[in-house]
Length: 337
Ligand SMILES: [Zn+2]
Image (cartoon, rainbow, N blue to C red; front, side, top):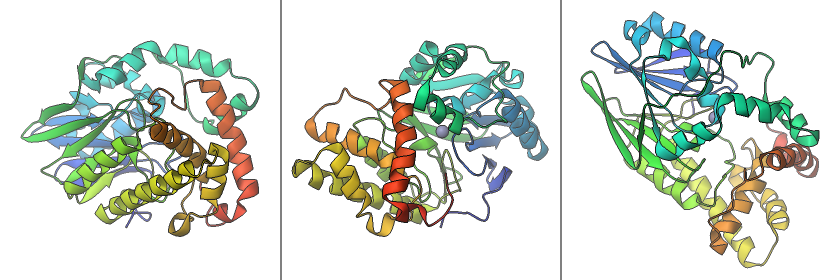
């Protein structure tokens, strides 16, 4: 079961030289990273949303592992800023940074300065939404273009001291290209933002099938711990439930697609029939998942939800209010963002 009791701020020793650094409540900008240590070497999976929080994370990591004082390898699970900006911390300045080719291209096209510019130019509902997401403690000073030293496609085997780490690309998935980090000796997987405990998944590309394929692969791996990009640590039963959830959503949306419903009608109908998944948080994300599944069923592989980022944010803002108003039952369980 998802480790809600252990979902506390800071470092968590997972055994076998592997640590997770957790950030409740797991909302936008509060992600989970991982540290893998062996024989005096250290590899970091993901940075955080800004330099100060990455520096706090590294200080915490140094208290449990001296090797964290000299991280020589960093793997990025995807390009979203909350996993990336902290790479600008000078402590990581000499590390090799691994990302997929596509992830590296995104980061090149959207360096932090350009992202900040785009954010500050937002208006109307898009501005309201980004203000809702960005918390006051985030500090976007001290950023410079993200330095990726090594890119890969498909699979990347890495070594940390005596142990091996296997990075697998899933593309497209949550973003156009995501990485999942398998740590075989410890039986641990960092799943990036592909999965999350008791939370509806907002698919951003018309490739739910890719998401299911990589999740099934992670299930076959039979890990003892799955680290999600946000939220509490998961076990194999949680991942199995997530796969069942994805299959359920895929099946329900397909039925509605075949009945000739519009995306709006299908979403509304789905929200009224979530069955055992109705206590999941984030029901407002489902409109995007339905839209992407409709594209996938229609064979349109080109559309994606962030094609027009301001419009995407504005839609999120409106859904945040509309879905609560029309389906209050889905928000009665807990005050999760
Ligand atoms: Zn994230």
